[in-house]
Image (cartoon, rainbow, N blue to C red; front, side, top):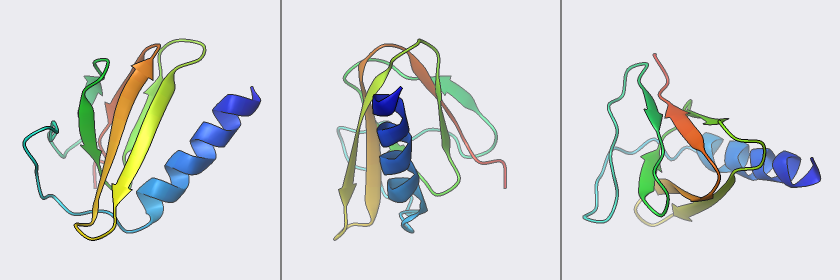
Length: 90
């Protein structure tokens, strides 16, 4: 439970840090913006934006969050377990 709490805290900081850029790079998957629920695939980095939610679909998913402050892009990569990204509908 402590791992999930720490992961959620890190994810919250990463997503709310103003990384709402829509720039893309060749090794990321840029998901549709409005209210889409997309199941994450293992080892695929997804661009996440302010307001996006990562929903756990297994008991202990492990997700790596990386922020490129120079480009203003934050990515989430599923390492283990199952999860989906729900895009902010606003």
